[in-house]
Structure formats: structure tokens, C-alpha cells
Image (cartoon, rainbow, N blue to C red):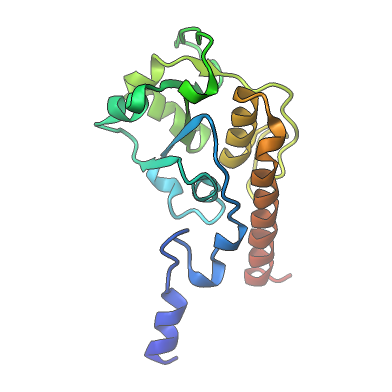
Length: 201
């Protein structure tokens, strides 16, 4: 193996942070959203090949993605530009979330935790500001298309799927985010094909 071929193999796409041979940028479908999106990503998810948050972030250019388990400037992130933050998270014992007051989509910010269930619960514990946010519950959740990652129930969605459904629900326009789900389908197919190439039967 030559030095140049080794360098090429390790080359990484600056946008999606994946090896260029596994780049997902061709699945990006840029969309604008009326609701602002803030993604708080656990560090363990950054280099996870099955993670969908980077694709979500690239598809919504106005979104913000922050990596960490705790966020020292979280207050500023949540309330920037006078938006009202809403946490996409199910009700959990021990946390009494306030009720979300009616507001137009242009005033809202959807906050999404990109982590495993256990890690997201820890992020909730160590960031008290998140505990005080009103929560959004998804309605009519379809079965997930996230077949490349193990789930304990069919309705457990990827970060991208959950955010797309939540944004559509908050804006009363589910069709507006259909391109996101189509992009996700292509991403899943690509990851499944890569897995088969690396693990032939």
C-alpha cells in the first residue's frame, strides 16, 4: 500500500464528517423550516456511522448542532433570537414539564437530544435547563425505517425521523418534511449496502 492510497482511504468529507468513500452529502435535501431546530448531540454519536443527526443538520441549513453532554452556554442556545424552546422528549418520571403555551411556528425552537435513550436521560439530568422546557409528544408515530440500528419497539425512531415528524406536527404540514424522510431512506440503503460489503456472508 502506498502512502497516497493510505491517505486517500483516510480522507474525510468536511461536511458530513465521514470517510469520502462513505460520504452521505448526495442525500442532502436542503429545506427551510419555520420552526428553528437545535440538535444537542452526545459525543459518542459524532462518529457513529449509523447516526442520522448530521444528515438532518445538513438538510436544514438554518439548524444548529452542538456536541457535548453538558452545555455551558445552553441558556443562550435555547433562547437565542427570542424563540420559545420546546424539547422533543417523552414524559419521564420525576420531571414535571411546563405546558407549552400556543405560539406561531416562527417563534418556536425544537430541541432534539441525539443520543441513546440512556445517554439522553443523563443529558436531561445534568442540564437542568432542559428539565424546565415544555415537551412535545409525537402523534400517530409510524414504524421506523431505521433498520440499520437496533430498536426495542417499531415506533422508536431515528433522530432524523423524529425531528421530521415533530417539525411537520408543529407547522401543521407533514408533507413539507417528506423530502427529509426520503433522504433518510437513501441514507439507510447506503449504510446497509456498506455493511454487506464489509460483512459478506
